View 1 (tube, rainbow, N blue to C red):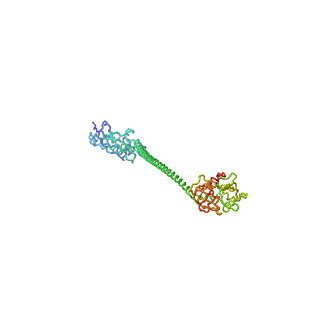
View 2 (tube, rainbow, N blue to C red):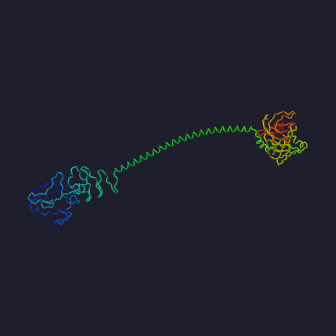
View 3 (cartoon, rainbow, N blue to C red):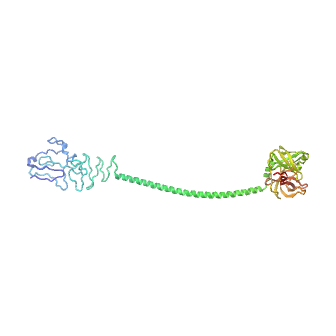
Length: 436
């Protein structure tokens, strides 16, 4: 009987034929199996590297499988020479054990190590070798660990569970999910920042609105207080104006009335006349004076008199006279501002000024007070007594109060006395000639 050998992984021996184990055959040379040496059939040296998996692997000593008895060279059962490694005792080409392509790679057609799952690419090609000739497959790091995807030459193998990446490699679902989660976190962070900024701005706007409302309220209160003070000031100013108006100011009164007062030259006599009231319907100006001023001209049957003011001279006409009240009305074509007649009667103690041309001196002004309001003993009507100095030439001049109104017409003075002057009330003249 032939000798049986325990089967080594990936190696099979042909069944011994009749006459196997003969010494003559045992001494036969091996047909092939050594690198670099051509066999008798002219096979190329690369034939010795052919493996059953189709991957060129260098010959290596066969390694025993776990649980299998290694093949030891020994004497033939028939007493022949011991078999050389890799040489069949039957004279046939030795069956070479298929060594793994790289350390840690299971040989094709053999069982995996205990606990190691089969290669996922074992069934893709005949012989069960590497899925692509010449491309190494990374081996598991530890027993029981799944084999990771193949890596490119020169690139370290990927860790278990790691997506293979490279130039142009698409992102896997885990990386896309991680990127989306990062984008979501960034978006939420930005939204939170914007919300905080918006809240701060809204709070600041609210505070500003409150401050503006308070400022408007204070402004309104201040304006109200200012308006009240302004009203008070206006009232005080009005009262002061009234007091100033009540206060006697001869300078102001004189400057206001002098343009309306003239010196009258009637023949050889001189006196004073003043414009009063509104302009007549025919135009020109109406003036008043005493009758005794124009008496010589009027008695002579003439009506022409002259009004003089500084270097100017105007012709005037006697319109009407009243000898009993010592009044005369004149009219001129020239236009002058008329003085206003006082509506209220004079009072004792009231301050006055008298404007006239005493002794022919134009624009003379004297001041005094109303001494009394008396009735004329001769029956000519009431008269105003005042203490302002007057002289010949003041006759017909206006007596003015502090309000720049005419209260009377200066007529005469007491002889052999000082400070006693008399004036015809303006009301008497207005009533007589229907003026004012």
